[in-house]
Image (cartoon, rainbow, N blue to C red; front, side, top):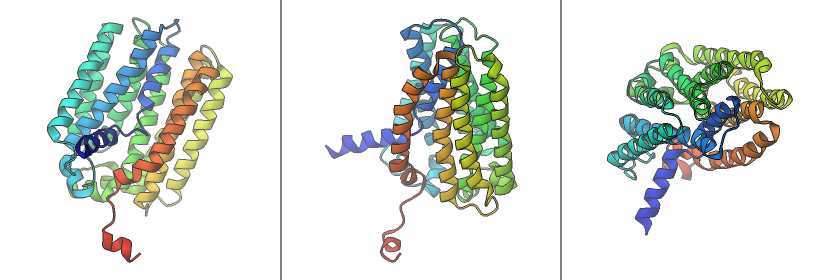
Length: 327
């Protein structure tokens, strides 16, 4: 009985439940901005396809990072032996096939968007993740494509008003992904990953991420005139997201040159919650504040709880027993 439980926990850790709700919420944001009256099936596709693509990215990313993780994060499912590399690849490919099937069912034109996103996931995991800002940028592009996919689950083509919101998520997730590299400088350097903080230092990486985040907020504010339904709800939730973002970057900017990994993780943890609020703001723009809050409240609670219980153990190896006894 222990082996199935161990395998199930390994899969759950690979999914990273604290991040799992974001791509579906972004897909719904695109669907609600499309301006039509989406059916339940269309909304389910807008949610499920990006979520499955996100899970595929985690499986394939962990597969490609298995050697690096063996050096700096041996507790993770693959290097610890609790999840085999073959199982990770097979599960990731299965999720990709499911994404293609959902896209084909909803709108055959959306298959091209889904294919571009899947290619981006592989390119990020296999090549670009360790190549500076280009890796962070492709991560932002993937979320922008999610917005377009959500709109195309409802309409044959995404309306032009969706594009500025896609740009918001492009800049935002480029910044968030860059913040995510700040805690892994030593491991990335040892593994040969030339991330922005490895190449340019923590200060430059922090300032670049902050500038990108400000750009995302600025575009989101400028897009207020394009909100099709609930401008007030959009602005209230956008303001809440911006306040969370200010808190995260406040932590980083106070000590950008000597940033402890635990502090960098704390700042990114705030952004993991913040981006749910941002996505809910865009849902409010297209569907109203009430549905957006009805979705956001439980998802944010689950994300915060699972992040507090699981994330540190996923990111940092447990200290040796001797260290525990003598500290």
